[in-house]
Image 1 (cartoon, rainbow, N blue to C red):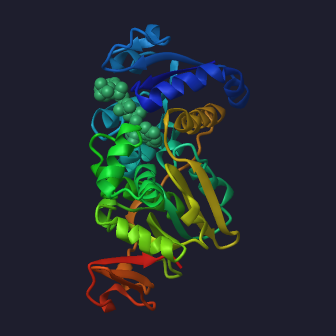
Image 2: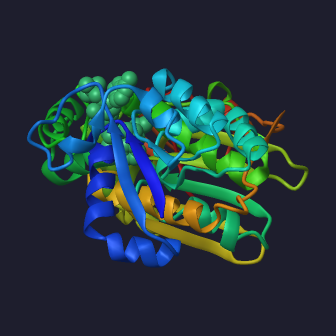
Image 3: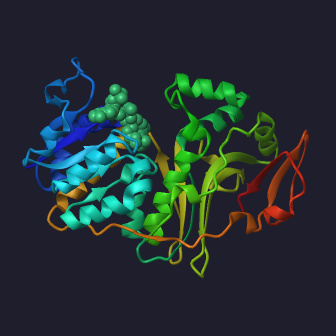
Length: 372
Ligand SMILES: NC(=O)c1ccc[n+]([C@@H]2O[C@H](COP(=O)([O-])OP(=O)(O)OC[C@H]3O[C@@H](n4cnc5c(N)ncnc54)[C@H](OP(=O)(O)O)[C@@H]3O)[C@@H](O)[C@H]2O)c1
């Protein structure tokens, strides 16, 4: 039997507890043994929760319990989550997380520590929420050179852009609606500014190419500048404005990485990914394009990915998977030097240009690459 602890009983952590309880038989069958939730660590009390008897406030209880072989970190951020993850790995416990910021910023260190301690550090839920994406990338596509990845990896901004398109709302109004429905945080900056999408792009690049892509190296433009006018212009020519993360690797190894709103023609499957859904297209040298689509966030869908990692970690508890990347930086190119067609607008006048690098564009109030 494997005993585990959940750190952080919020949206994702509570979903993990629920999925572990409701699907205990499936989890045990997959893992090859019973998986038992022994503790939940949180700063708050949850007296009305059926899991209340498992709650403890002090992480040291988990750390010092030799019966606990696995820790699920769903606190988020790089503060206490980093400290607890280091301590859990140091204590020889497997760790599973949904925390993209932690993986993007400290993945090299934490994966090296996991390797040294002979345990697994898994993070499937950190990109694409419930969509199986990272495991297929490092398992099933390992016969390929990964040539490119592009996708909608932030459900909040996709919800807002879809609401603008479908209900004719301006961005501020669509944001308020997203907040009221729980699709956007009260502080939505990391979504609106593209920071969250950058972290996910970095994790994809790290895994695909085995070298670290630091978030601060990725140029990001969020959706604050997208006007209803741009959405309507795109729709009038069978297009949609979507916030995309883009990763392209050239033959010489140079990687171009960026996050920005794009004009996506409806001939692309990505134009049809609406509301809070996510989708990523991975282009492999052998397989061509593969599309991963599904629910990119939410308590239970995200818990599906976390618990899937738990099962895999237990199954590989004696022979940890050698996932990792080095801190050798990727050789990066400037995306603005890549020729692209552009949607440009000044006032009410707009057009789609011929393919050209950004430096050759005429002056324009708004300029978004066309996804070709
Ligand atoms: N929500 C999603 O759909 C989703 C999807 C994919 C990935 N993620 C990622 O998953 C992580 C968790 O997200 P979430 O939405 O579940 O966050 P959340 O709802 O805010 O849950 C985090 C929980 O951790 C608790 N916490 C804070 N400090 C703690 C400490 N020192 N010790 C123990 N518990 C502590 C929080 O308590 P307080 O509320 O009192 O601070 C809260 O209950 C984040 O990295 C997020 O980016 C989320």
